[in-house]
Image (cartoon, rainbow, N blue to C red; front, side, top):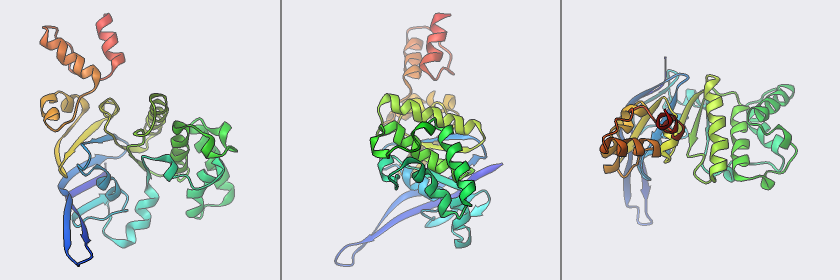
Length: 279
């Protein structure tokens, strides 16, 4: 079952200067794709490729200039669907400090359910479950500004989870984190997807994209390729032409092939490469 379906999706940013001159910047140019319910999809591309604009079209923060974005069969251009879409599709952004609105962790996690009008007793249950899910229940009485970057991002994710969405779109959630914080957040993302939550991860870290079921590659607002990580990363030369790389394990596999060692194409992670080399 398709959860997202884009049909000739176009999005233009329109602005006017002080003289009334109107300029248009096409950020998305005729996208066609589907994302299946319950799957983990990564979207990669250089800065300015349209990734964040696409993310905002996925939960109706933006709506298409032309074409259609369907979310669970609902057209985001239909104003009657806007609230329903946003209830189903939560978003977690790059900077956790921009998403935290309360001075106490548990109050921040409760904010989303409160806006949905959920019963207070149910909110209490949701907050505790969400914090346990991201391994932050022991910090529920803490002030967010005392937490590390990775911990703050896990609080932001808990706030999204407490709304019980069917899908979470992560817009470069690890971009501002150190390696330890990145691993903390990726672990939570994997656990959420394993529970059946449709997951979309926008990232510029190729090793993160390698964890997904499917990768969509954007450049200049257009889809340049899509497929499984193995299908996408075996096209390393094309990715490099788009100023994108491949995961370190894939890069090592390519170098081994150049030296006459026929390493498997499906090695995506360092752990998998270590296992192969030790055999």
